[in-house]
Amino acid sequence: MQFHPQIAFEPLSHQNAFQSGALKKLLVYLQGNSPFYKRLFAKHHIDIHNIKSVADLRFLPTTTKSDMQEHNWDFLCVPDKFIKEYTATSGTMGKPVTIALTEHDLQRLAHNEHQSFLCADGRHGDIYQLMLTLDRQFMAGMAYYLGIRHLGAALIRTGPGLPALQWDTISRLQANSIVAVPSFILKLIDYAKEHSINLKETPLQKAICIGESLRSADFELNALGKKIHDDLPIKFYSTYASTEMQTAFTECSAGMGGHQQPDLIIVEILNEHGDTLKAGEYGEVTITTLGVEGMPLLRYRTGDICAWYDSVCSCGRHSRRLSPVLGRTQQMIKYKGTTLYPPAIFDILNKIPFIKEYIIEVFTNELLLDELRLHLNTLLPVDECEKRLRPVLQSGLRVMPLLQFHSASTIQGMQFPPNCRKQVKFIDNRETPGP
Image (cartoon, rainbow, N blue to C red; front, side, top):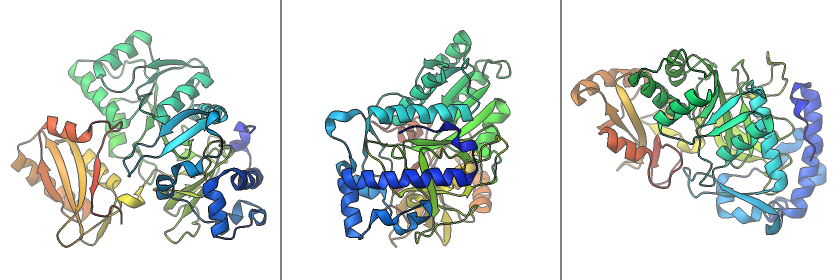
């Protein structure tokens, strides 16, 4: 596949025409090489030659994460000898899924992140400090590594953790950019304050943020974003991706949503009935990968709730943009008549200075209904914390969850269980997870 990096700057009509042509090629490829999609097309009596454009996607069935969990290797379109890398999902939403990549897929991944870094004002002379793991089959760390090298910038692989090492390396090697999870940036800020590091005089200029949103639905900084930016006034660029989609949606300096890469991915926003939603309406992000050789996906429902926007961005790109993630379909909580998503609770807790760390747990009570519990570590005496916290939660959530207080070490152990490569802030212990 030939990449078309400048297509994001072309009118949407040109982008749609390109994607329609790429979609027809993808359908032929799946029909000829994918055991899973061969069966799916046969089951639904799909004649792929009737699909002429992106607008015809609605006539095709969707694919879900459970399909990949149950039939993982039926998605593979190449013989084993062509696989050059095995990656895997984190397993936070059930059984991990293995994604196999060919040499072409690795080149595509490098192109994807190269374009993402360019979108986030990356330059040849930048020095990026990569604060993510490159092991444990983690695609994101590898993707950023490939993208930075493709950009021609310098790279420092410090990995996650150890704030003392991070700050020492930033100082010694004059890193001007970091790639990190926002909650870890908070730990860097806390360490800097405790050790008299002047945050206004570091060489840092920008941060690529992964895994946690820094913005609310109106694109303003949320509580986490404000907390970080108030102490570390550099440029922040959020990026949204998943292992399965092998593609990232990254913010430009306008901060008005993650830009689609039209030569790599088709995006739809669907409601619970599978209907396509209009710009600005929230629904499930559904993607079709373009140019993937090993495990391409067709109308794959990611479970993430977003809206899309198609107005021309001030950066000059005409490509569609995704909003910050509102939540995940499987993580929706029905609690005492109120619908909640974990990110909304995160945002409230992030605004409370006396809450140091937290985990949200949802479980099934004796009435077989969702029950919500907050596990908290506080700087205050427990009675005082509860007294001050209750009105804030009742005002922000309109319901009052159960509260349970823990030591810092206990919370740390809950957030970083063995063999988990991501910090855990939401635990779903329902008998049947999901809404």
